[in-house]
Image (cartoon, rainbow, N blue to C red; front, side):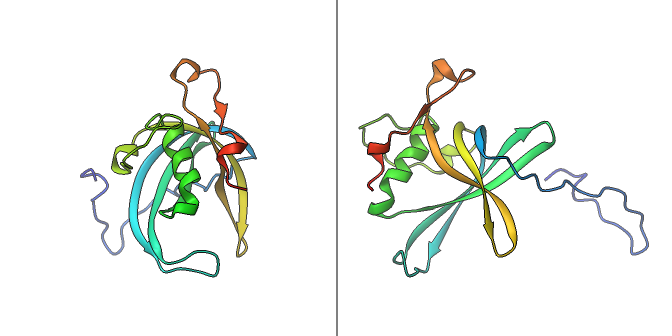
Amino acid sequence: MSDFENETFDWDGEIEQDGQEFIILDEGDYPFTVTKVERKNFEGSDKMPRCNQVVVYGQVDTPKGAATFRENLFLLKKQEWKLSGFFRCLGMKKHGEKLKMDFPGAVGRKGMAHFTPYKKGGNIYNSIDRYYDYDPAKMNGGFTEVKDDDVPW
């Protein structure tokens, strides 16, 4: 954090900035940047067992400002297709090759994904529906969609 962000206010100090409004993306394809990753332990649910989890934070730059998102990745064999899609979209994994996952190495990388608004508990969030394979020759012109045969259902 910069010194400016660490400045303190007096009890009767003046404030001015309102902060940035949370931007909800329309459904569509957007380039994004990974801004942070966080390791967690998922306690389990009806659908998934207890496992390691990585929370990926990122942003999509829009004319209105930065739209942020949070993506949960579960380190389970049945979620390997999604983990592969994540790393392929960032150019860290090639199709069909093994990869030692490097989540800290994902920070700062750019990828492309299809986003959809997700409603939960009266709130709306930016959610990744699918990743697109990274192609440096097409960085400014488009991406190749992750193939349906990569998805186990």
